[in-house]
Amino acid sequence: MIKLTYVSKSQLSEQFSFDDLYRILSVSRRNNSKSEVTGALILCGDNFAQLLEGPEESVFAIFDRIKVDKRHKEVTIVKKQTALERAFGEWSMAHPKKISQSPEQIAELFQDAFKRREQSSFSLEEILSDAEF
Image (tube, rainbow, N blue to C red; front, side, top):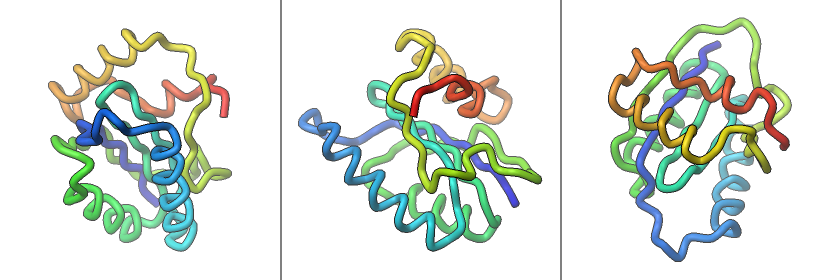
């Protein structure tokens, strides 16, 4: 099993709403369940971060679709690792209702992730460690 975390710049329109986000989450949850993939997604300002975990072939098949999805640009892997257990095993795609970090703190983490890529300290697991779902 692998865990892959990426960040990307959102190409969503300014009219994008939470209803639109929940439609995306609904489709992701259905597709991820079929592929035995779990994970988490956050949208902060115009940045996405997502952790995908599961069978390597399934995770990369999903990631390959994301790389060509017009809703994303600058898709950047910030962490790729093998894993023995899942961080979000109960969620086909978790999305927090509330996180403890301020938008400014999250924005700084995103900046570091885009700049330093896999050498960054960006950890979606850490960001969501005390989140409300």
